[in-house]
Length: 159
Image 1 (cartoon, rainbow, N blue to C red):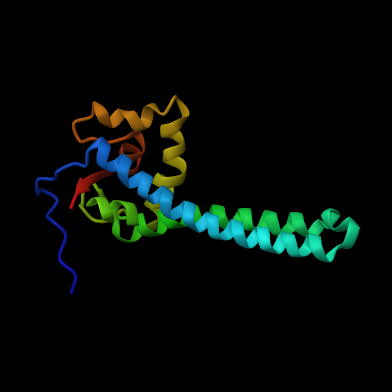
Image 2 (image 1 turned 120 degrees about the vertical axis):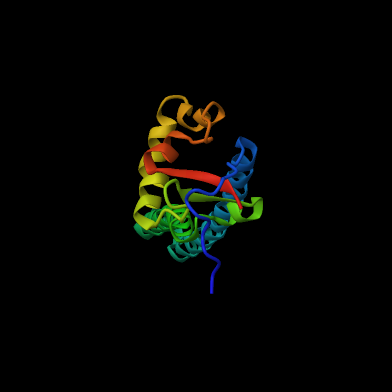
């Protein structure tokens, strides 16, 4: 049986800028490794298509189809990684390794998939629009919330 979440009135210790930055870096390594593997698959398939096409092999339209599909898969896996893990338990692998998690500010529970989607895709776009000011906002905020945290009603806490 999983442990019960802390009560909404429990004192939370908010994650620091450095912890969040390190977790993002580690998540970037995870996503980068996945993208590298998919890129290698694309390179091998493209090489096979070029080699099988004879002199005009480089003009094979399937090359562009393969590259486009791999790009779409990379994008879906990249966004899906964050939405799935933040929505399910509030922690990506990077956040887990650093010892922090995203929780709903009212319930202290993971935000759920819809809120994770909004936070990770829509609200992070808003945080980045004006010179990344939305990300830096946490440096002056008492709960260390970024704009996307405020919009999603989440905080990032130490576990």
